[in-house]
Length: 154
Image (tube, rainbow, N blue to C red; front, side, top):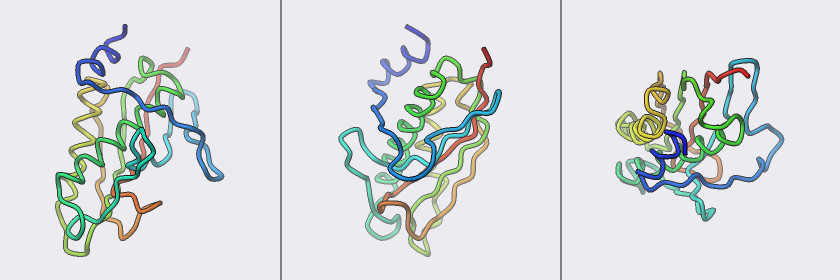
């Protein structure tokens, strides 16, 4: 068992099994040591989408849970692309959060994803980050995130 697998188990987390994208794009693309993961929404392993708008129909706690869910999907995409043991560093994480016009606590919600990635990947999960409000996200999701990742080359 790898360190990453041990950390997942210790956190009582399982990577979801994700199918191919529903639309005309790739779930990830790789160029040498670089891996880009397409947007991952707050869809649970059972297929339910965590929906809402922060400041209207969702609380900060709802947002944090949605960010964690999206981050787990991101990890699953990384695992499918190269294996988590081959992640050298998450370089940049972009997080979009469905928010009302006056909600300004996107960084707190985004911390849910950031903490989960660091807890699972250790230092390789440390990253630069942007957390932005969005009027609406795909399929009504509460959170969507994507990442730029450095990977080991064979």
